[in-house]
Amino acid sequence: GEDVEQSLFLSVREGDSSVINCTYTDSSSTYLYWYKQEPGAGLQLLTYIFSNMDMKQDQRLTVLLNKKDKHLSLRIADTQTGDSAIYFCAESPYSGAGSYQLTFGKGTKLSVIP
Amino acid sequence: NAGVTQTPKFQVLKTGQSMTLQCAQDMNHEYMSWYRQDPGMGLRLIHYSVGAGITDQGEVPNGYNVSRSTTEDFPLRLLSAAPSQTSVYFCASTSKGVTDTQYFGPGTRLTVL
View 1 (tube, rainbow over the protein chains, first blue to last red):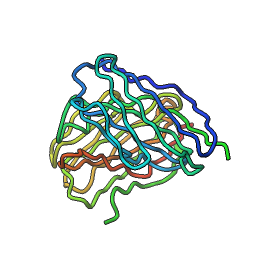
View 2 (cartoon, rainbow over the protein chains, first blue to last red; view 1 turned 30 degrees about the vertical axis):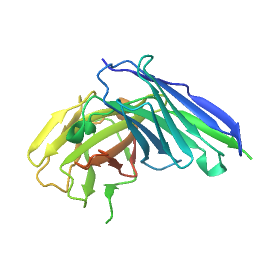
View 3 (tube, rainbow over the protein chains, first blue to last red; view 1 turned 90 degrees about the horizontal axis):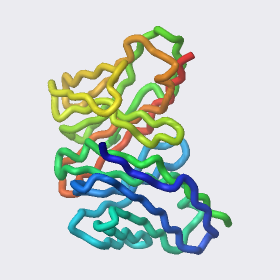
């Protein structure tokens, strides 16, 4: 079955860049997502990338996709204390309505040191 | 819009008790899902629905039932709670737009003693 792997913890200093990495095994993955979960809250979609893209930038967020290595990364520029949260990588082989069948990684807990 | 709402926020059950976790959305989304989140396990799909009257199993459906009588509501039922069902439960609904955004509820923290 599909598998999504992430490192569990990352610690960075405020103002530095954070890079959160993710690998996936399903070669049919079409959509790849990054979600953010703050303590006691649900998941918030940060950004997504289609498998036919290599990079996507959205303000402080940059997503890089290496399809050959099945590797996805999320870079947060100028990391702030408000970025402290758990970040989940997720994939879906489906577009449109099928995106409810997401496979999630276990999440990376980002701690930002003031 | 209230988005996706879940009740209750916290619940403690004894083994063998039954209960229903409520989920509602006011965005007219056809697609709704239930996930459980366990420490170090990420989120796992329990059941999902592609529209009123239609439901299907996800990765971990055992011990849970769902129904979808209306577009807005997607309750999750535990018929006989077990300690292994201690978890945080998230409901989500999905738009049909290009971004395929899943909107998540705030979660229900369930403890089964």
